[in-house]
Length: 119
Image 1 (spheres, rainbow, N blue to C red):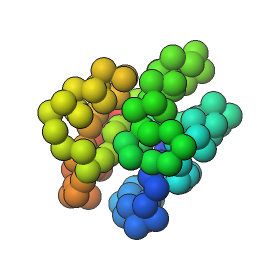
Image 2: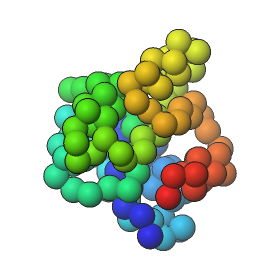
Image 3: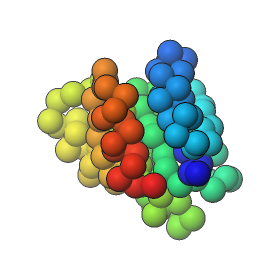
Image 4: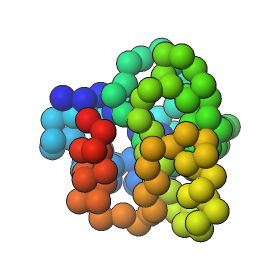
């Protein structure tokens, strides 16, 4: 069982991701802004982090960059899950250190398949 941090400012999206992943036995911790995501990542141990891009306080790109430069979190896989679907957005996300980039709306099976690659 993996511990997964999910950050998204949409309660509906958090619920969709949680309902998709919890039946597989994973422990899900949710936050609704970038600062909270970064703080949780630095104070708790996670096996995977799922980030939205557009969030209050800090966007997902900023959080990913911080996570990937901090010694204790730099090896945690990060999946960006966002409505930003331009190739330039995907390129920028990967440049910030994201391991995967899923575009919303996504199929639950696509999320599960992506998560399974890392845990």
